[in-house]
Image (cartoon, rainbow, N blue to C red; front, side):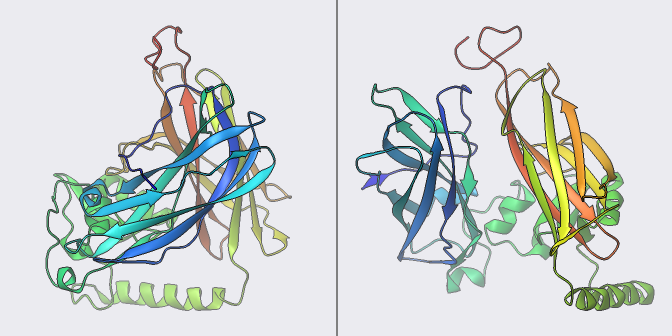
Length: 350
């Protein structure tokens, strides 16, 4: 068994020596203090060297504060694998007795070698579903070691209640579409709420400070949500390049469907955001797009990646779609890179 854990983000130094495929983390819904829980990762090796050896997952614990409480062990894949094949990687995660209650996620990629000993990394990274951490004693008090200077998402995943999350100066708290918190500037809040990307944290029927009109709005939204249950869910299908060199064009194709129906004239909002900035959704937006789907449900946009990117960087495309009945959101991760030796490129190798 090999102990493997590191800190987020895991960034590839160079775009070459990558292998392609996909992976799936078997659901791990609960971690209990003082116990060990098994998990499995299914990896599909699509293309790359004809033979890969010593295939090993590299796993990051998020939020980072939980690395002191969690120990991860995984098994390297014995023997070699070739395209096109699927392997199962087994592992387990052990929680210390004093781990605070809350949630965690495991972000991972894979390393391997070819028959000549050259190092390779997976061209993609993945993450586990959110994992609940059970600790009855910690649930009744503020978790040990929580620093309120952490981002709102880190505070939340470490067990801080929504009402107790603190934002830095000149920022306000909102709840995102996935029910996690974010701190944004006041000028950004209204735009996010109008898109359906976020709601005001204080907007609750049980909050005595909410006015009658706000309560009616919430009730109407609840009725609309109930009527939507009779329809298939709105879905977004996204495709694009996972790695893009600066100065070239990234093209992302989006298709919007509801069941088997292609959705025409659905409103599409798209933000390109810096993956390294989680705590401030008003400052990390690099580019914004909006438009409507065509008769086949497609919306295609192209963006010339600026030459100003001077190192390897992960970006996120946050895609919000509404068809007038409901809204849904999807995200697409990709990597921007420059080559060692290029002007103003800080990538390793210079």
